[in-house]
Length: 276
Image 1: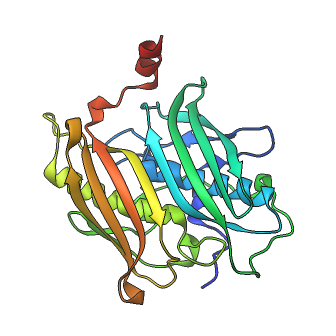
Image 2: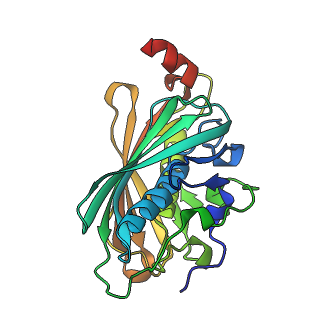
């Protein structure tokens, strides 16, 4: 299956990092966790995956690099609206590279950090002569929640599935790394909402999410199954397996997600006051 001309990522309303100009976009309601105004960790991870992948591939042309591990941590609760991102390649060893994306509000206050490790493709056909991130399409804003846009369906608390579709593929022709995270977060939030709500009935949010990619996800459908693994200091931690049902249930990625009550995540303004 070949990637579609228009990927789901073009609807995230984000223009990636290029040269000395930071990336920028808007935190819109359909990018937020259900019932909240807090950005989905999987949405930020998807943006980081695209930006870091482009930066590292561009630094190593003509060789193409694919994601090995990727994580994002929310350190504050940004307001809806404009944000910027700053992408840095921290280490480039040729066959393996590591980078960071720092997300900040319009005033420059950091609200999330993402880190990723990328490895050079062993396939000699995976080469590019050039890569211009500024030319990557940036389409319309989402008109429905991100998980729904990608076709993620909750089949039971803690379980979600998604089909393989052309608009969900990466440049290599398999499931985009961000969709692993979106599917896993969808499964976790459904289980967390079923098990934990604060005294006002508000749902929790994922404040930390890390994906370890094990093998390419090529067939589908894909299923994410979440299980609770600990409740340290008011947090809830989950382990998720994303499996390829079209390949005898092979595990394609392992995802760890940490959830917290909505009120425990400080706003950017509160975080800035604490740091002073």
